[in-house]
Length: 267
Length: 306
Image 1 (tube, rainbow over the protein chains, first blue to last red):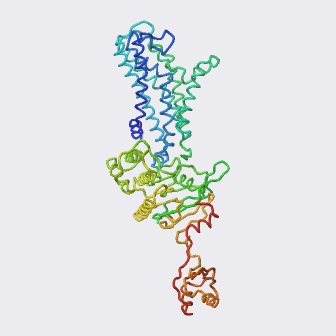
Image 2: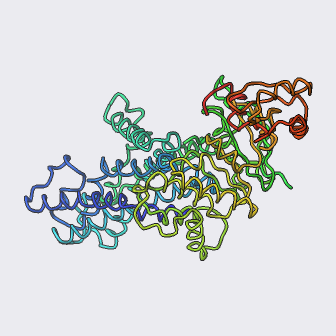
Image 3: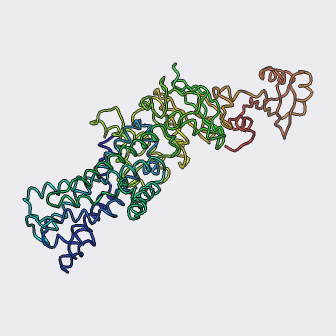
């Protein structure tokens, strides 16, 4: 079943179009920044983008920072929201369950396919970012945000960890999306519910009055990976972010399983 | 003969409304079982409970000797089903769809997958289907493909909800022959249908469901037992009435031209013929009147539409 789900994901044109768009946007941004030479002023615009002007090796991380606030969560919401509800809408959910595929296995297969999509998308963005950075700005040893240069193996490690961190952040969105997808037979409704959760978190995160809530919001630490490019890297927020995501992932997967295992399938 | 489907007091309530009310069904191995009832009678919900898609509020269901339910999927390994229309990935071809379904569940060697898919397609007359995606299929083709998906694993039990939807008369006849053929080779078939004539033609047993309850369940032969009325065609019909009076039991019900309906009143039909012939009356034709499934159905459902 897991192999079947992966095959479905990889043979669906939508998967590749989404990934192409995701990886294309940072490349486009890169072209503009290069041709105009205008980087965002410090403290404004996507994180790390201003560093890119002086060093292309920052571009993979900057590319992730470009798609992270909106584009990536939308893509993940679409894929995760489609998992179970999409099968229901096609009328294939009942045939899979009758086949029989045990409900737990179906859910696990859907989860693995969704996580694979996230990894694929994040790695694609980083790789295209690397190539773009190399072609447009040239790769130099890293000068960190803090102004100290570090060895290139350090850079590879940090970019690698950034990719993982962004992926884990998106796993949180995927878990919410999978849960929503088990609660409705309309994939669009599941996607919108996931986006609503994401937007609500973003809005609360902007409001000072809700400051007590901030450390518990799923999106609060999303950009904390920028701290990895300081010297020495600042781990505290990154670790907190991982903890928050772990909590959201386990809670929503638990809800998804509890609801789906005995639910009446009427689609 | 073993029991293939058994439900005991199977009940489904949604809030305060009872959709399926204490249904006891019994389908034996080798049956071609017709499942009839007007729209909204609870047939599909019953079938969904049989397939573990919907959890019963009360009662239990057993398929091929094993209990079924949302957490008990393994009982369905030898069951093929078509429920409320076929479902496919519209962007893939029919073959790709069947291949995915075959790969999704247990059983069968992966190496035989292609052969299984081709066999199933051949069974429903789609052996030479092309590579276009299912979204470009006609309704009838989708229905056939759905049936092919149900037949993929050569199931011991086939549960088919309205399988002839969207097919033309020739297609319906082909499927009818396929069902009879499958039953002959040992498959048990449960067929829910609005086409009473279809059920009457091929089914061995039938259940009629109305308002969530099973109101009749018997062999089709017994459901269609003779009504005790014969239709007599004779050129000497005027002389028949006095003859009937002499016989005592039979009564002339109505008459049009040279044809009359006669209630036998317990007299065997051959005795009636003998008496008429002995009186020198010509008997051109005498037909024992049987109810059609439609009569039975209308009688049981109080005229609700099928």
